[in-house]
Image (cartoon, rainbow, N blue to C red; front, side):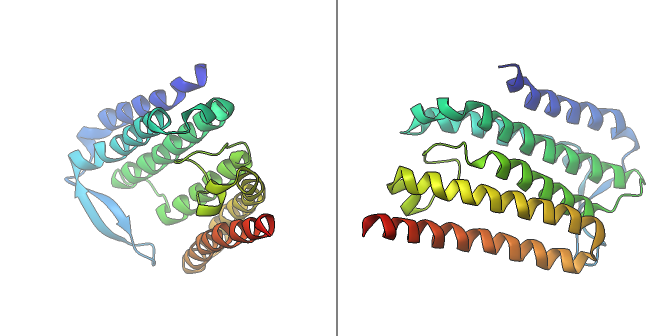
Length: 212
């Protein structure tokens, strides 16, 4: 599939951007922002230029290798396009962070915490829109003891879970543009907790219902 070259293309673009701006970067590059939106952590120029591309490469390789070592590797053929979309979207998210981080180091006026929250929201929305296509496996999707034990529990949990991911993603993205940073942090943490509680609670209830 041609889409498999999107992720490495994005990684090469990240490295090209680092090379293009490297000589203008300060000795220390911002790497972390506090809840007040202020920079509270830095890394060296070299590490800052390579950090996000390295994470992108790691994610790309990991998601290519995992299907090959999964005992349920045959299931991946049914959602190979979805998996590739996941890979491309994750790498694109890290590219967004990379450009924002180096851009701030160059003096660009970027609200990095807000950019991250909006990016996370869009990431959740894309993943949620495709989550229902994921077939039972050991590495990708909502993996609880009950989804892994019963294909029907897996299917129904991912169908409803995908809608939750999508709705929360859109909520995060809109809130990231409109709400204060502190409120966004509470919203994101609450949303992630809701997903975890849903994953375990809903899949368990379905399993109990089918086992009765």
